[in-house]
Image 1 (cartoon, rainbow, N blue to C red):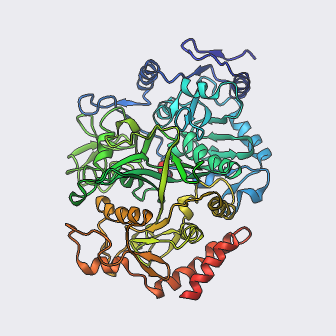
Image 2 (image 1 turned 45 degrees about the vertical axis):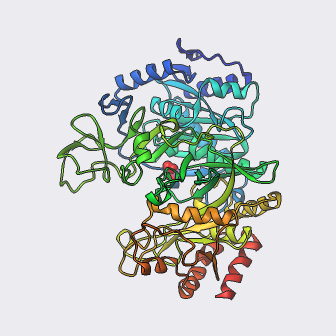
Image 3 (image 1 turned 30 degrees about the vertical axis):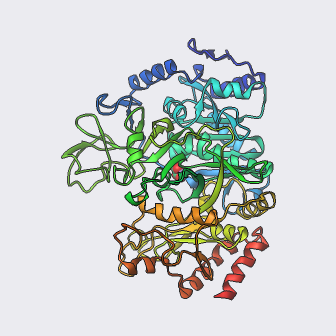
Length: 593
Ligand code: OXD
Ligand code: MN
């Protein structure tokens, strides 16, 4: 068998012997026609984009309406993360914990190895070096993704710092994440997303969907990242990072964790209401935070990503004007609808739907159709530099110091709009037990809570109980631990009306959170934590009936008794490793109630 040829354009020589050896080894297995090393240059982007268009992978949009933008339609069976096909392949099953699917590394390498054998015949294998985190930062880590998908290459180019910058950061070191990806034939029966944390390796096959195939994101930055963080003493979290500058010119930074599709991108790009005119919100990241303890004993954060992979439906100039501006150019849209004039559309975009569209599957669609024009998980991939409120510190190698940690669920009842924990371990307990309530429409049964600890359930690369213990241990090294808050924008009245307006009005809650963090605001203590008293939240100009706010802030003992009871399922599932401190937090609350 002859060695695969290097593509003639390939301008990045492999100066790292370990890297070259691994690329050659993978090429011998996958047998591509060509191996192409990406350099991340603008010239390369143009060339690969032209190739993707020629191959029908990308469809150019109207250059007047959406300059530099393209539409991709995925295989209809490949539109979301596939948690049931996602595995942690640690040597010991116990290390993966009951929160993960587990496969032995021997079995996984053998099983996927058979699928990867010859998978790239007739295709190009792209070598995608990428850097997670700012260049020159002690937070940052290098990954190399070998993929046969040009769509993946072009998306990785947006969501990570891709190409030469990553090879420069790597130098001769061998501690890079080894990612191997092939779309194969997109057969869901041959789809596996396997993580080998002890080898810093990811093998993903059979899917081109972002969360399964852009290996830097969920696979490396969260699943492998959380494992590395545990061993190296830091945290990889499913959190946005934002900066808030007050009218006096003081900027504070917060991180916030919400489950997928609960408005993280909106919160990260929030526009404060009129009353908060002197305030300025800036975005560092909208999905992932890497947190370390600084020499000053404070918690510091970077966003490992360089772009946004956001949910399109529901995004409009009212819910998120900054996202709309971020996707005005140089954006890849996936599975949205196409307008007759070459623009994009989705349910919940501004204005009336056009009379006619081409739907996400490429079929003609007419207004009034009972079918959705855009897939509900249709996405935009946009560079963070497009964001008009991007923080000037988004590229700061040191990251930013964190003043408050926010956890948020989607709860129709029980959880008030905002709650401050008493202590770090109580805050970890609130984060560990956070969840989202299903609605009657979705399940036929109201009040079923799906626990999603710290919004990390699908992303924690090891045992969740050990993860809580790691969070608890972090406090020992923080001389100045940021206070922890629980928020809930989704509380409803008994007749199903939202009690809090959400979106930009969340600024009112953020202001209180920051004032608490700086010791500048009052609160009322309840059995579950501190809540703002009447007058502590600035409600000027807010058109909200007084009884709504009171109801939104209520801590109801009966509801909390039921809540603590229902947490039993989580504590039971994680029984083997649940830290004693969290059991005690639960017992203490039970006793108080
Ligand atoms: C997610 C995402 O699924 O960010 O959480 O794509
Ligand atoms: Mn996410």
